[in-house]
Picture 1 (tube, rainbow, N blue to C red):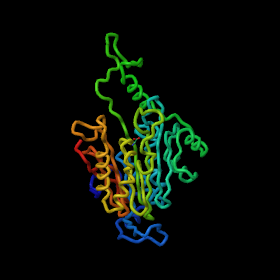
Picture 2: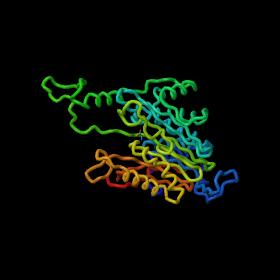
Picture 3: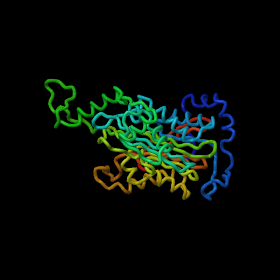
Picture 4: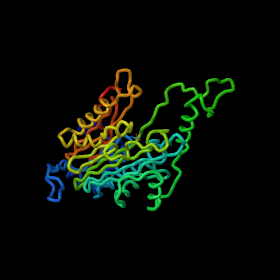
Length: 364
Ligand code: GLY
């Protein structure tokens, strides 16, 4: 599905219409294909259908912010980073930035990456601690270093050098979830959940603990027809300290090519890293796939490459989920997940925000 056909977000249309700078943008949305100038690095003609932003479902305000900034003339990279900053600073989203669930030791370690289509540059930070806006630091890695990836203490030192404060990112809500996980993971250690004097089997897990892989991805096309993207996350909840997921891996958690489109992901990062799926999706779109078909192709690739019994259900299907989101230079959008049925992602144009259905490989 590449239409934006779901209900608008609450208030989104009103918000767009009251922004006068966007009126002109709305008028240009859907313009006929045009060939970019001689400075375009590749011979392939670029088609531009107007500004658009997409994100994972938790980015409904993100895409509205991004499209608002794009309407005011912002570069797509600035717009998507400003959009995801709203979620990075939101203590209620326990999968991203401040308020994100910590690692196994109770420390919040964040991953983020950005890609800028016009310059074909990327930047990322992995396992950064104490910095609320890892996506901004990833953008600085792109802009102010000759590198692509910075990790751990080096990434934090770099952020501090650029004026970022070190903050406590562990909210009370996230700390309590971590304590609950830690106290209930085993009867073979000495951490005990609240219990009665007559209780036995303390710490016995009543049901498998659900693992969280939440993240936010956002891609956008700006008024110049340029594409950029960002992915930012606190990663897998209660992960092994030092683990990085797919989000800071260029080609896995995100990828864009200014002549083709962009893709990004949420979900189980390990599966995505092993298949470099965002790069795969962009290459499939280059070869002619729609965004949705390309995302489904990546889901199928992951399913085909999942061999270990512990990662398969009784029917031999992956027992984890990964979502992909993509847009192309024609302004078509699409997304897919391995296990689905009810999934959606967010998209916004100058006309407003929408939730769009995710296609899926297997019914969840
Ligand atoms: N996709 C987020 C992660 O695996 O860390």
